[in-house]
Length: 432
Image (cartoon, rainbow, N blue to C red; front, side, top):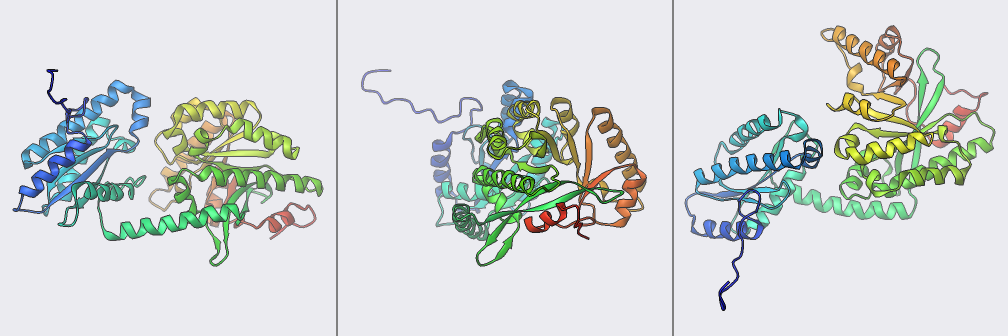
C-alpha cells in the first residue's frame, strides 16, 4: 500500500462474492433513497439444518451448496436492479421489490433450490420477508425478516413467512414468560406427572414416563408445550432437565424405601443436554446419590437430537449404554433418518410415533404392513417397541392382531400425579 493511501475495505464475502453485512446495508440504503417507483423489502434466507449438511456431506459440499444459493439470489438481484448479501454461515439477504406474486416467486425459488439437496426436507430453504417502510432502516427490516424466519423453524410445510407486528408482540410476551420460567425454576414450581407404559393384553404397568408440569401460582397446572419450546430456543432447557432427573431419582429412592414394586422410569434428554452437560457423569452421580441401579432409569432421546448433533449424540449414547442405562428413541419414524440412526447407536426401546397407528379403511392394509415390518426389525435387533398415543379399542385390537406387546396412551392411563402413581405401584391397590 502506498504511503498515505487509505486501506481498502473488502465489501464482499470471500466464499460467495456477495456483499458482506456492512456493505449490504450501506448499499441497500443508497438504493432505497434513490428509489421512488415501488415499495421494497428485505428477504432473509437460510438453509435449515445447514450444520448437519456440512457434518454429513463435508465442508466442500457445504460450500458448493452455499455458492449455488448465492448464484441464484445474485441472479435475482441483478434482474431486479438490487443487491444480495451473504453474512456468514448460511445467512443470506436480498433487497427486492414488493410485487403481488412475491411469495409465489419465492416458493418457486425454494422448489428449485430443493433440487440441489435431492429434495430432503431437512435441508430446504426458509425465507422471512419484511417490507421496508419510511420509518425503518434496511438493517431494522432485516431484523424483522429474521424474526419472521425464526417463527417457522421446524415447520416443514411452511417455508415463506411475512413479518407482521404480532410477531414482535409475541416476542415481547415470550421474553416476559422467559423471566417467569426462570423464577419458577428458582422457586421449584415444576413437578412431574407419571404416565404408565402397559402390557397390552393384561394392562400390567411395566414402566413409567416422567412428564414435567408447571404448577403456576395463578394459572394452575401448565403443560410443557407452553414452556419447553421457550427453554429450547433460549438454550436453557438443560436447567429444567437437571431438576426433573433429580426429582425422578429421588422419587424412585422413596418408593424403594417404602417397599413398593418399582418399575423403570423414563426421562427425556433434550438435544441441548448433549452438548451442555456431561450426561454420563451426571447420571452416574444420581445413581450414587440415591442408591439406584442403572436399569431403573430409561433415557428418552428424540430423533431430531440425533439428526442435529450426530457425533456428540452417538458418542454419548454409546457411553451411557455401556454404563447400563436403557436408551429409548422417542417419536421413532418421525424423521427420514430413523433407519440410519438404528445402524449407528445402541437402542433398547423404540417408541413408535403415533402416526403409525392413525389409520382408516383406505390405509389399513398399508399400516399393518408397516407395523409388521417394524416389529420384525426390532425383534432382529433385540429391541422392545412401545406404541405411544394409543387411545381407542380399535387401535388396541390392531396391535394385538400384529402381536405388539406394549403401549402407552389415554386408553390405559392419563398422566398421573406422583401420589396416584404411588398408589398404582402398591400391589394391593391397582387403579382402574
